[in-house]
Amino acid sequence: MEIFRISGGKTLCGTARVHGAKNSVLPIMAASLLARGTTVIENCPRLSDVGAAIKILTHLGCKIERDGERVAINSSSVTRCDIPHELMREMRSSVIFLGAVLGRCGEAVISTPGGCELGPRPVDLHISALRALGAEITVDGGNISCRAPKMRGGRITLEFPSVGATENTMLCAACCQGETVISNAAREPEIWDLQRYLTRLGYSVSGAGTPCVTVEGASISASTDMRVIPDRIVAATYLAAAACTGGDVEITDVIPRHLAAATDALAGMGCRISEGRGSVRINAAEKKRAIRPVYTSPYPGFPTDVQPQLMAACLSAEGTTVFVENIFENRYRHAEEMKRLGADIKTHGRVAMVTGVRRLRGAPVTSTDLRGGAALVLAALTAEGVSEVSGVRHIDRGYDDFEGVLRSLGADVGRAETPGN
Picture 1 (cartoon, rainbow, N blue to C red):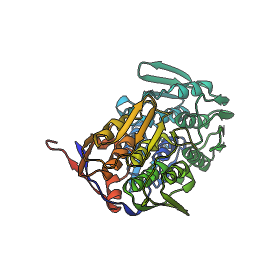
Picture 2 (spheres, rainbow, N blue to C red):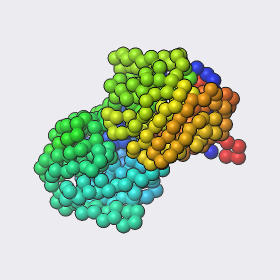
Picture 3 (cartoon, rainbow, N blue to C red):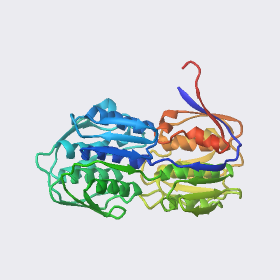
Picture 4 (cartoon, rainbow, N blue to C red):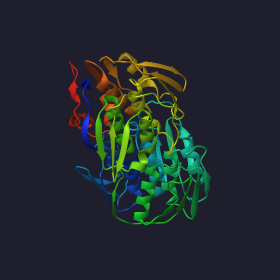
């Protein structure tokens, strides 16, 4: 089993480039099934989730070529419409293939997805939306079977602005007859990036970034290239790492407005934030202070995927910061591990109260999910002595060479095998 071994106390300084967005590239890879040609994706990060998506596309009959951050997907010949459990379970967002396979093949058979255990992520919204487009769907235990002899566009109102449900509906609607209007759609930047890809293929899609997305069904046969947007969650993680260590870090290849919720919170802690064209710099030399309550919510609110990393930055801030988690009920699993480092955290249901302490101490901790694992690494960067973070496989799902980037900023962190493995 691999671990990160971290010797804390180093101040992070320097420049780090942010790779392409995981939450953008994965739905675009699924959408490539609609291209019926070759899609070349640039700025594609080297993540285990991307590897899982490549396995799924290969299973479906696509031909894949990868060269660094460039991935070419030829979907001219799709030979299957089923995705087995062993492939679905490798990543939670694998459910995004449902709408694309159904739209391309007229039928789809998948199992419920895997990934981080952060609490229930029901696929009910996905299923109800696809049914509204005319799909016949049977759910039997862990299997979802869909067929769509005739699908037509329509008006769909999502009960919650789910990113995955919005994307699945967009992909399926692109293959329907007529117009589909999705109300209460997710507004995340990754939705806009998916719209950008679909329009490059020739589909008529508009409204991404607003609560109303419109898709005009069409039959398209096209090839295109696509450079995905930078990963705003990774960018926020490196900013939080600088805040944890009192550092001075510039991150490049970013879209600053996508980071507004995170940078506002960090500025509230006393960090100095400056933005350039495609860059954000943080100087955290001043003593950090607690901030007003942090409520996670869909974009443009504070992202749940940044809550653990901001919590890491608050561990040594003067005063008490309150977090209210409104997306995932089990998002505080990292809090108990942070307490092993000496953190003062009290949780009750969806609320966590973090009171800053004068020092943290190195200890062995365990990552149980992607963002919580990254936050444990950040906390360990500030702890006295050596910490070991296990569960590295979770972190590899969303960060390309995490330890290498941190080392380039001055951190003392390395990857190692535990004895006996």
